[in-house]
Length: 418
Image 1 (cartoon, helix red, strand yellow):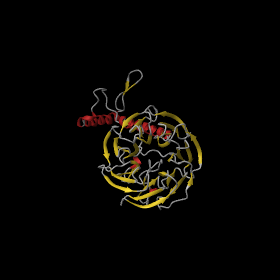
Image 2: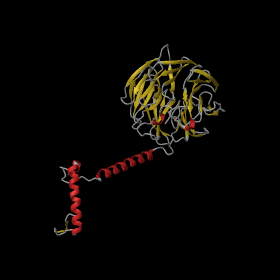
Image 3: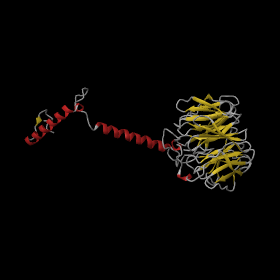
């Protein structure tokens, strides 16, 4: 303010004497400050004092841009779907022992559907013993946690029913008539159950609570069985076991929007799982002996990553770093690093085993898998790969569920939590 002020004509006007003295003192103080603090020196590039407001102003712009990006991401979500806790990790809600308040007080159990015995074996994971056997409908395939975490649904495929189990009390409810429920999923908004009607060649959208049919979507492939959802919930990828195909399904429109045949004669795709960053899909294939690596957004031809004979089940570690792949045909479990996209280890289970479907314990220390052809269940140490226990159950154990597990809601199958 004390400097002469230029006028339009180029002449200057000078401040009043009182202001001149004040300005002189201020200039002297500024010189002392600059002498003591080198940072106050003018920039050699611009020949002027740095603008102290520049950094905060830039920070404000960056924050505004971040907010706009987050708002845009939320706008893309399927309406009614809970936003991801971390946009870079879809499994951020699945950390060790971080259980939802909904499941507080639920006893820790492993529920094993025995397809040949029409029963569900209930295992206490602390003692590795079967503590209960529940009679259910014909050929139970999977035990599926409901979207709201309050119910376990036993998929009685040939019995054409779902048997509800209250995981808090253990009470078994009255079976619900549902035709051909080979497997069961839930849309991320919690509105609909999606029945994988394998024999009926249909994806049947039902009310998530009453199981009333909302829409049945015919498919031209054979053997729809497993699925997983995109980060925004707008679509999901489905494997077709018996025709070696993949489907891409629009969640809101309940419509198949993409279909492709896997590039291998006799391909037999099984479990489907998306990577933590939401960019890569992995589809286990029993005949290809590995996992197909797919970009779900483009839905172009996937590439094959060999893992082991009879690749079948896919499970994510509690730290979101590793994908466990059960190779049913050779009795091994392969470990894939999500970061590198490469295999890091392979555990061989002793004594002739057939690791199939399952899940990871709440604390992340044990991988539980059914032994499909051996009438047993395996408890595997996730730190060493050592077999902790093999537990006899009924005939043909399949899609076992470890429950409860961390997560805010369930997308179905044996436990896909977000």
